Image (cartoon, rainbow, N blue to C red; front, side, top):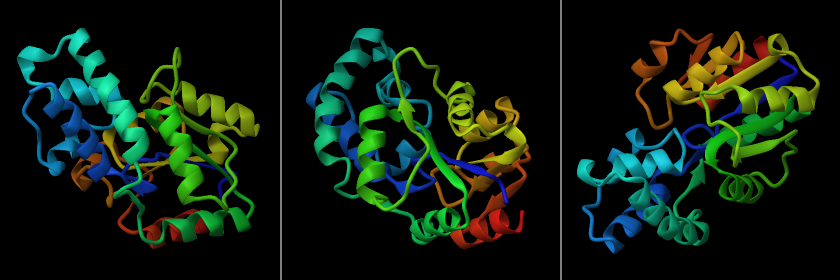
Length: 219
């Protein structure tokens, strides 16, 4: 079993897509822009909220100024409503509890902004201890840049060969590759299709949290 397990947040630990869609649609509607179905947001998220807003805006409106304006509306709304519909994926809490009992160090590396990342982890997983809970922070590159994973491994005093990285998207698979983590694991219950994960040839793709736990324990 690996000493350190690093998890993505959105689409891996929590199903947050409905609240992300609701908050972005609120900001878009306030500015008079078209909104999108919730499923469309599965392909908008993953690279941080500025990229989310860029993708959600009409192509002719994707300016830095408009992105900043949408962000200024989104964050206050999302800070209040980010747990309205979001929930842990069934079985995920058991995975975290079991890994912790087994002596694994746990951490979170997300492209969600830091304030919301911390709030959601503390709210939904209050009994779990995490070495670090990192979201998107100023002056720290977003995933798939491996900086956040390197920072977590340094804090845990663990090497890449003793680390597993788990996520639901191509961004996560590339993050693991960039960090030199051989045990990069995809989860198919998140926001992106299984085929997207398969293209990166991860060490394993789990279709359920139970399968994920079994793989981690066996390894």
